[in-house]
Structures are given as structure tokens and as C-alpha cells.
Length: 207
Image 1 (spheres, helix red, strand yellow):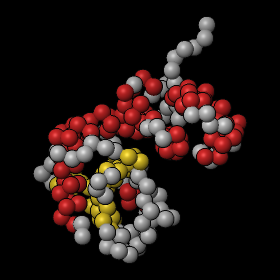
Image 2 (tube, one colour; image 1 turned 90 degrees about the vertical axis):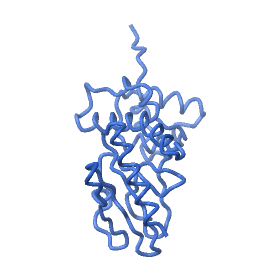
Image 3 (cartoon, rainbow, N blue to C red; image 1 turned 90 degrees about the horizontal axis):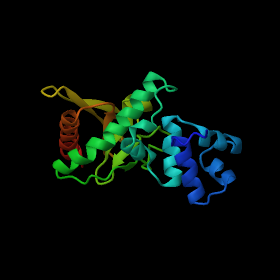
Image 4 (cartoon, rainbow, N blue to C red; image 1 turned 30 degrees about the vertical axis):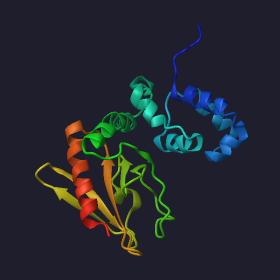
């Protein structure tokens, strides 16, 4: 009996077919071999970094799809750490747009793309708010992801009353700032507290 259960691989395949992208071209766009594309189509699990690249190439946010259908996250074959990351992203898209709306901010969240001088060779955040230089990194702090870089010093800002913190990354070349939030599992109240801190920090420090 055929297995009709929808998987993340089938969703990706359906989108590739729908957009009529040749497999060879798709493979090149996501930086893998042609045969590996067919392997992706068969998967019930996928690496977060690869899913981010595929989402960008297909211009479809598969993380938001995971948020709408948590059963697409295959817990049996995933490591505990990967499952928690995927669930955190799912919860992020379920809660953060509502929190942003409550704060009177645009609820649009996009993939991060930093092109400022000094960022070219750095690992970048995963998501950002397009109207603000506020970003999110899945499972890591920005400092853990970027490492030590004299052009991009990173310092934490704490809200001790609410037991949360954000990171401020300063571009030493032009003095611009980026406020980053580690994307891990948070309650809606915790997301509201940390986003309030992020907006307050951004408004206070930007030039």
C-alpha cells in the first residue's frame, strides 16, 4: 500500500515541479549534486540550513509551513537537538507575528540578507524584521555564529527584571547597529518581553 503521508521532501518536490525548475538547475541553486535532489524529495527530515537555502531559492517559506503542520517534523528520525530547533521555529512563526501586532509593529518576517560592508564573509542571521535591523538566529547566539570579529563587536544587553537579553552587533566601519535575538523555544509572554527589549535597544542605540 503506498505511503500517502505528506513529508517535507514531497512538499519541496511539489514546489519544484510547480515552478517547472529543471532538476539540474535546482541542484546548482542549492549547491548540491543532481542525485542529491532526488534524495531530498524522499526525505521526511531535513537540515535547517539546507531548508533555509531551499526556501530562499523557491521563494516559499517552508518554516512557516512547518508552523502550520507540526506533524511534518519527523521526531523518530531527528536528533533531539534538531527536533527542538524545528519546533522552536514552528512556535516562532505561530507566536511572533501576533506579538509584533500587539506591539504595533509590522508582523512581516523575512529571510535575513546582510549586504553591508563588513558582513560579506560572515555567517548571517536566519530571519529579520524588514523595517528594523532586528534579526533572529536559530539555536545560536549571533556571537556563537560569527565568532570574534573586530569589525563586528557583539555585546549583550540584559533585562534583569524579565530575565532576558538581546545582542547588539556594531559595524565598526560605519557605526550602524544590529539587534539580534536567539531563536529558541519561548512562551508568547517571553517573546513579548524580549521583543520589547529589542525594540527599546534598537531605538536607543541607532544613529
